[in-house]
Length: 392
Image (cartoon, rainbow, N blue to C red; front, side, top):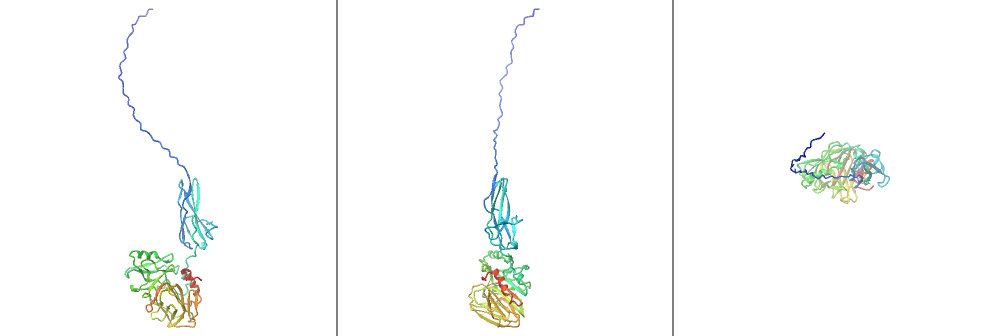
């Protein structure tokens, strides 16, 4: 079988025009890698302690600065020592930032230990030692309350007294009550008043802390004693003191009248002659001169010669016992004036005097209406423990 012959055919492909292609641009991507490395903790400054080292007071710890990664956490441990140098021991349970000193802490020393901790470990640093812990504040009327008739002082005399210490003024028209701070006259409150205009601050009232309510007052501005001179609080031996300039005095509205045994205590520093207290009729008073003191009770006077240099702080005791014999002491010195006796009413109206003005400082004046002969030395010791007038 013969197939037919097919002639070749020419194929023509269509022409395709070239096409332009555009590629989209892609922004560059920046990749960063942070590597966090842990660091062990460090304490760069030691912890510190604030507060008063006295039984009943609160000590507060402030943490030292720390470094480390992750940020360290700090814990505290209070420690106690007998000498403040060695033998430090942890106090069980005392791990907060504050510590209240108790009676068992008296005479001891304290520091706080700070431990900073993170996942890399821990480190410890300690504060400096406190000063030696002092006894709790000792209130005169808590120790010797029997026979208390009146008490005027720049310190708190009773733990149960809730009143103010003094009332003050700068012009005789505006008056401000001043209380206590840490059982002593609130100095910051007085400084605030004085700083407003730089004028002196005067005392218009000294409150009776005995509970009897017989406050010492002065309503005449020119006769008011001073507690701040416009620059600073007035002090004797670093304790606040009221200054009587030789024309000043305070007085009670109802005169103290004592028919039997009695005793008074006064902490003063006189800069000239004058009476530390006086009666309305001058029948009872206590006068200080450079060469003697004069004790006058119910009209009977006893003069005792001795050298009394001015500007020396002293604790004075005077009175009469149950046999009506005169009693007198200065600091730890006893003067035998028992041969002098008196009967009748002892009157005390003024702190200072309007007849023989007192010139100097008075910090405390306390009156008892009982026989103080056997307790006076102990009372003087208690007063001296606060004022540090003399070395026993």
